[in-house]
Image 1 (cartoon, helix red, strand yellow):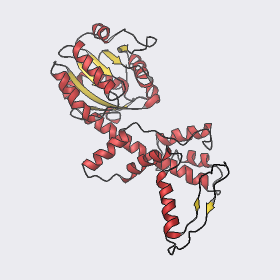
Image 2: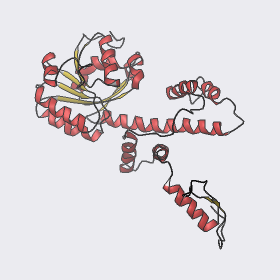
Image 3: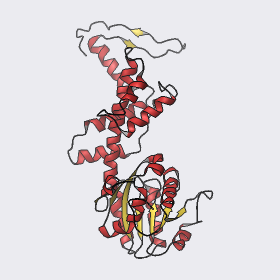
Image 4: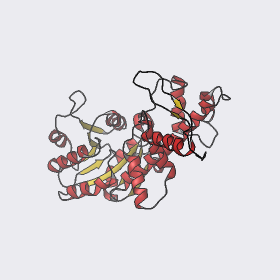
Length: 324
């Protein structure tokens, strides 16, 4: 039993057994609870359908949804409203946008089924280290699901790994902000790495970053992960500088605009990810062209039809300003 638990063993239906869901199933089972998992892939599923999942659980059923956000989650909640019974509980633990939670809750409430939204952090390491959990919903439904939350969270005080963030929607809103902060932290570490790599004076960048991992104000688990990455590839030469985004950084910034809250660091981190996807930046081409026009600054021309190297053009004639 999880050290923070103490409740009797319970059942859980778990929908979605990918990297996160599969590890969560293992961790919950290790805490002594029964998990019945459903996934479309026959090699990992415990049952053949959502109907079979509902039949395998005793009332009141608790079903955790761990599928991609958006249409996949909404469709799953709709199907659960048809196979579950009054008094049952559905938990959306995926990265859904918080605005989806109220409609999901209303759909289920019409059938007498409860709903919680839960932001989950921990990635592939959560199976062994535990997951940070931020839940939204009623006290009654939180209490019903608490044995599962206790099994999933890290060992130690409950409040250091689990929060009842507020009513329905608060869990996913909190996770959205969490991921926005994550964007900013990662970008700061990345920029520090690049600056030291560019400076000939620092000859052992991985050693410096590892030295930050204890006793410094910038130590963190993210920094530890960067240390691990640099052990495998000291200059990150095996990687391309292309970074996608899951959407939560965008949502965070949209909410900041709605509430007139300045988020310059998180915004810059998101835009840096956009920049990473451009082989050539049209914006920077425009900046180069403007600098050449008003200041006569040199520009680099693209490769010509012959395939030879592009020219570097000198100052344009007739320009007076050298600013910019």
